[in-house]
Length: 341
Ligand SMILES: [Zn+2]
Ligand SMILES: [Zn+2]
Image (cartoon, rainbow, N blue to C red; front, side):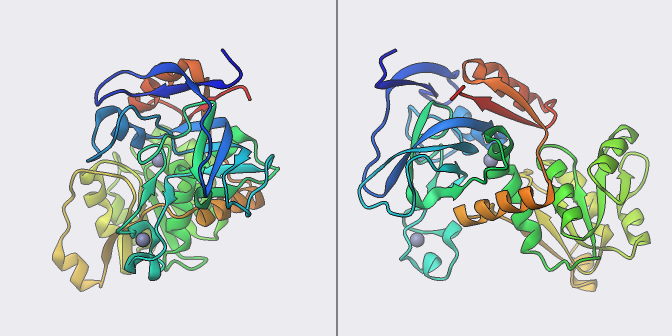
């Protein structure tokens, strides 16, 4: 391989397998930064690229929005970052800054130029990538690239949903599901001072829940999770990390007065009783991950409190196997690719 070329993992059309190709190392344009990728998490949302579930997605595309690496080159006009700096890039890849959503501070809802890493532009399944400078988060020295990568999507999503919720220290916060998102969600909830309840299927998940710091564990196969939550006065927040709408519906009755089910797992549909919502002024809302600053806060909080993702690590060349592992749902708990850089 020439030293002006690199490895990239691309999808050439919806449904096509991952292919590892040699490409020229990309040059950053104005306002962009080139990153030497060290690690990139594999997220379930990467299946959007592989399966073609994003209208207008242009192929070939390199997926990957849980990126950790080093700033390698700066495009014109970039002053905020320096070559050699450790950075992460997450799902939110940029916004216009001038539309009404952006002017209102709702950058995730940008109506004009919303950029998603690994979807709107090539992501981190490669030795190098180019990202808008606005998409960069500073990565603390105390986090290795493998530790930081999954926090750029699974981490920020759970952390940011919880810190923007109305729950106060001491309130009951339940986390539904103890997988890739949930095992981080319970750690953040504990560290934020919530009375944290883990909910999952099976008695065998309880030791994990306890190890992650849960104050209570509910086995939803053996017990009615709603009734169990009501015994503690009802949850202020239930963070739904599963992709099973029925499992979400089954915990709704566990919300306390003014309680809120925050949905971050992309289930097809769920059932909600209007009477349950009205009677207790309860709500169901979604949460979208966050901006690069939110990612940076996630990384800093994780260092401060010791929150870490449990990862299975694969070298970039074993991407197909790593992706299969993630899609199987059997990974404990996030899968991370490394480039060896
Ligand atoms: Zn993701
Ligand atoms: Zn905008």
